[in-house]
Length: 215
Image (cartoon, rainbow, N blue to C red; front, side):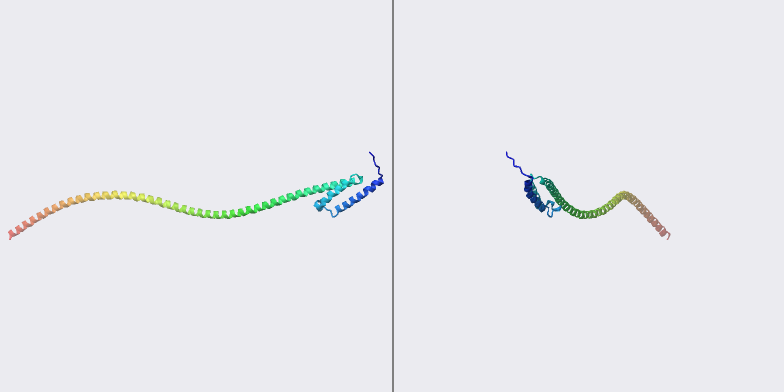
């Protein structure tokens, strides 16, 4: 195999145009470059294109330092792009989570307000019913007391009635007995009056006879 020797002057003549081209590419790549544009999609295409250009001059030692630094720069750009994408995704997820949470919170708050209104209405009705129950309970207690008093009065009246009935029966029996005795005494008195009247008539007759004889 035949080796072609090239003098240092010839290598410089070859690499200079490459270095000039690389310098121009780097100048364009770094134009208006700052941290916010580090992950810009168009610029990242330029970054990768520059890396490809640097790979072309891989045989030139002068390019080694630039190539190494540029690869590190592109790696940092990729890392930052990945990190920013992760942050954007997480921010989006967080935003969606917050939006969902806020929506749920609003829904829960609305539900709580509805429940509070319903609970207030239920408590009001419960208080009204409780008041009515207490009033009815008081009326029931009063009615039970009246029933108890009425029951006791009925018992007393029944007792009094039984006593009166016994008294009336006794009085009736006494009346019958007294009537029978009075009838008997009356008959005896009538007989005695009849006897006395007969005796009086006899006396009157005798007196009349005595008078007529005297005259």
